[in-house]
Image (cartoon, rainbow, N blue to C red; front, side):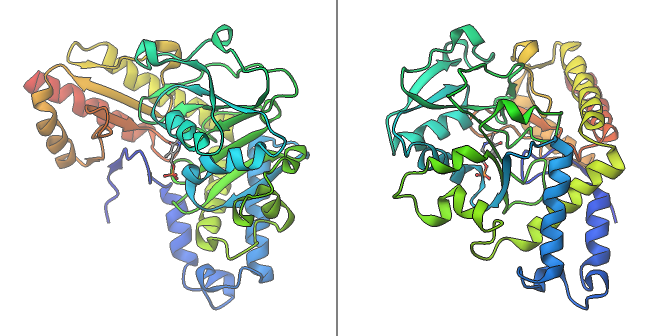
Length: 362
Ligand SMILES: *Cc1c(COP(=O)(O)O)cnc(C)c1O
């Protein structure tokens, strides 16, 4: 068996140790005589799996007691609609920061429900830096401010947490950065993340919401899109994606026990991304356009000086076992996603390949 170097933007690499554990437990979960995926979600065994996953996530991120953790479906994209549905029940204007493709999609979805206000945008810079705190101008009746912490496609990340008046909740799409660094949850009203980058397989979505905000839903919101319904029913209003939930729990355990927590994970992630950015910056053949302070820890887009070599770069990389380096179709070039499960050895293999390709073809 060979596991290659997987730089996929999502669904992304999983820790090998987690997959091995899932394999060992797959047919007969802890002597129960059946697989987790064949179990009732109401069984005590699954309830224990679900509760442990939540406890471990709470430990990892030091989530305060007045926040609820919800496990939903539909990915981050469904949360683009859930945010206005759950936060505009008392009126007000949805406010957004525009920093690239994912934040733009969130804005578009909110506009179906109420015209949004763009409180700041990095469009003019070509999305190579985030707006500064002083650039953020909320509307007078702001119901919330939404932003995307890490623009997965652009490789652009926030180096600060926007500061707001206490009554305006901060809402954040952390799909591609959650669990990559420690996090001060208390600064946020709502944090959400699809699983398939740093949490587990696709199909489950984590929402962390401050309890008082559960009372702001629009009455017309379908019950399966209402955060409060999930909070009141331990995220089991209907059948949850049980196996994805179990695998997410194994990833949380791996992060706690094998890595040692999110601070240790951050140190590893910093070494990975710094090594790759240093290699890009040291070369005239590779380039990354993002302002250094806003370069993503997780997604590193880069271009080749001669774009006609893109196809050869990808084919040669794949032959060396370096997978999924093609940039998003909307931006072209390359992108290496360095999520938690991507090791320092994976990144070193990429750097070695890049130097070799430049020597032969640059
Ligand atoms: C991947 C991603 C999404 C979309 O996630 P889905 O689960 O496909 O809906 C949204 N926002 C960000 C920042 C992402 O990285």
